[in-house]
Each structure stands twice: as C-alpha cells, then as structure tokens.
Image 1 (cartoon, rainbow, N blue to C red):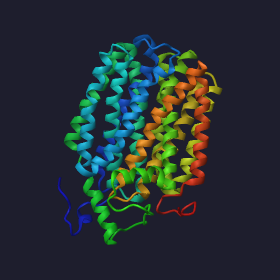
Image 2 (cartoon, rainbow, N blue to C red):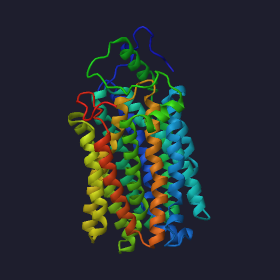
Image 3 (tube, rainbow, N blue to C red):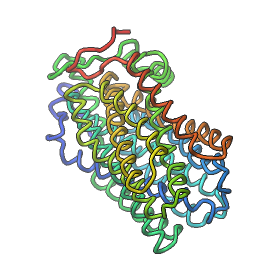
Image 4 (cartoon, rainbow, N blue to C red):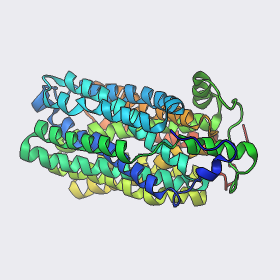
Length: 440
C-alpha cells in the first residue's frame, strides 16, 4: 500500500466525488453485488420454507432463525470490519468478505434441513459485515464532508436497488428452474464477478482517511468545518469507541437506536411480509414484485434523499423517514389487493430511503477520521443486530398470536417511538447546519 508523503499527504489524496470518480464507481459496483447476494433470499426462501425445508407454517420463530443468525453475525462483523480496516486496509477486508460468501450458494443447494439455511446465513452475515461495510467506509474516505449525503445515498441506492432486482429475478428463476438451482446459479455468478472486480479494480482508500486527518490536524482543511464529537482521544481503543458511540454520546446513541428500529422493520418486510402476501392469495412472482418494488423504491429514492440531507440537514429526513416507514407498515395490513400492496411497498421504500443513508452520513459527520471506521462499525453493529432483535421479538409476537398481523403493529409502534427519540435527543450533524439541540 502506497502511503502519501508525510509532508503534504493531502496533495496526493484529494477528497471529492469528481476527482475520485473512477474508484467511486467501482465501489458502487461492489455494493450492487453485495445487494444481489442478500436480495436473492428475500422472496424465495420465506415462501418455500415449508414446502422444501419442512418449516411448519405457524413456526414463525423457527422460520426467523435464519435472520437471527444473520443479524448476530453481521452486527458483530460490522464492528470487527471497521476496526480491522483501520489496521489492514479497506480493500483487504472487502476481499475477505467475498471469500466468505463462497459457501452460501452451496449450503442452500445441498441443504437437508432449515438449519443448513441458518448456517448459510452465518456466512452471509460475514459477507455483508465485511463487504458492505467497506463500500460505505471507502466512499466516505474519498468524498468531502458536504457530499456525504450524496455519497451514502448512491451507495445505498446501488445496494438496495440490487436487493429489489435480485428478489424479482430469483422469484422468476425459481419458477423456471426450481429454488435451489436458481439460487445456486445466481449467487455463484455474482460472487465470482464480485471477487474478480474487487481484486482487479478496487483501490485501497485508507490513505485518504490519513490525509484528511492530517489536514484537520495541520489546519489546512477547507470547506465547512465538521463538528466532531468530543470526548475521545485521537486513537481510542476498540472498547472506548464502542462504549462512546453506543451509550456515551446522546446523538450517536440516538442514531444507533434508530438503526435498530429500521432493521426491525426490514426483518418484518424480509420474512413476514412475503408470508402475509402469499397467505392472502399472491403467487410467488407477484410477491416478488411487491418485495422488489419495496427494494427498488428504497434504492432509487436514496438518489434524492441523500443529497436532500446535504441541503437541509440529516435530522429532519431521518425523523420523517421513521414515521413514514411506520405509516407504510400499518398500511400494509389495512389495505388489500395487489395494487394497494404495491403502493404500501413504495411508501415503506421511500421511508427507508429518507432515514437509511442519512443515519450513516450522520455518524460519519461527527466521527473523527482516525476512528471514523470504528464509529461506523459500531453504528452498523447496532443497526444490523436489529435483524436479530427484530426476528426474535417479531417471531415471538407472531408465534404467541398464531398470525403475522400483530407483528406489523408492534413494528409500526416501535418506529414511531424511535422517531420521537431522534427528535428529542439527536443533534443536527451536518457541518453546514446549526445544531438543533443544545450540545451534550
């Protein structure tokens, strides 16, 4: 890895989307591949769990066990990836993530029981924790602070548009070739392409973070001055970063809990929403359209919700997104019919788009460059552990009531309260906007 000259590292590693466009595009391609891998499970597996893997239709907690395993592993690996990338580099962690993905399609294809799917999702959690984390971190490394809403919006657009496309494509392929063969062929091709392009075209971006830190330390930084969170040394330990971001700073902790809430909702929409739709008469391809529209609306809307936060600040879009998502979740069980469910999916997708990239940008805004990857890893730990929390809570609720509808109402209420927490406890983090609450 080539480090910049110590005298003026900013001369070699300028930040900005335009000046780093080539690498920015390749990072977007990488997250598109990551989204395809997780998206392939979104439609097919929940619907065929009973038929192909013997999961009883009312055993909601058993069904959701594959999301629990995924969430626990991905959450933990997000933090590990952030910390590790500050030592060995972003690209190395990205490649490790793709190597971990290789067993996923094989375990699904040869699965003898649902526990094989649970095991496959352990590897999926490693892949997501390492690979998706590094696409976010790398884009933040190479862009300016006032562009981070746009940068994270494009990143999450690429990832979640891919989630939606993969859900639709694998539903169609499963109809033609069967679910196992469809997922084997689809995932194997994606993983091979992703690993090859990561090795050949992705550059290491850690030097950009080092250069940014140098500019702040030397007083040569230009543009809006970030309001970095105070209270940590320049090179804190892993434990110090985790405790500070999780509990020690009001804005960071508000962002973390909002991350948990949005993944609780995504757990509902990943597993229980397809079951709900299928149970109300939609076929596999129609279910694929509804879940695909949710993913595509989420993905595409981030192209404007990220830049929106660069103009008006992060906090208002995040709060609005949590409450709009709650409205969409409630609407999903209040309406009936294919067109109505498509509309509810669009509402939920736009709600996700308003909050999702802007939570990431908020963490990046106030985290110091030398520990920013660890801060992002801590946030993403809590956010993606939300999959496990959501799967456990919603699975127990559905199991106790013998139906999925109560899980929708629990999720909607959770999102409303999460938005209220953000409104009351979080500061505005964008460097070009005034704080909205007193400094902690």
